Length: 220
Ligand SMILES: [Mg+2]
Image (cartoon, rainbow, N blue to C red; front, top):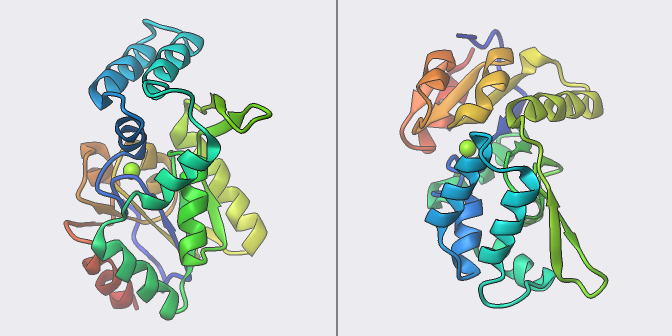
């Protein structure tokens, strides 16, 4: 477990199930008329090596195209509409008012993270899955980095390079296994943990987001 050595200047936060209630991927699949259970089942098969990435994509696109091909504008509309937890709004606003630099590092969909960053004027943000569209704006493909944990570290390093912050000046917030590597590198606050491993690595554990600000303000 890493303990903060000084008052942090930058807060690196996960998005899915930390700032949102649910996994955005499942929310998206349902809003496109597909079953999130079928989605979860397919993704599990891919992770277990039972089907290839090409195959899982093909099967998932069948779910996503349940009601016909999906246009970019439809996706933007959905991503704008996916709610954050009520308490996430106030946490983000308060952190910004107190002068912390915020950075979103998410294993979720890049387009969704872009929308949140725009909504809250967050300068630094990184997602994982990148969507591709045909010349008419219809969604046709996606890239996904399977090693989400490690991608988060690479994105964190990019953030440090761009801002000049040092590891010691940063604290992470997260909830799941893809935050493990980041929590091994900088002190972490785990929110409503889904991951026992992450709980063990975390500096602090909170059930509700407002407690995060109290913890940060308590650091000498
Ligand atoms: Mg998460």
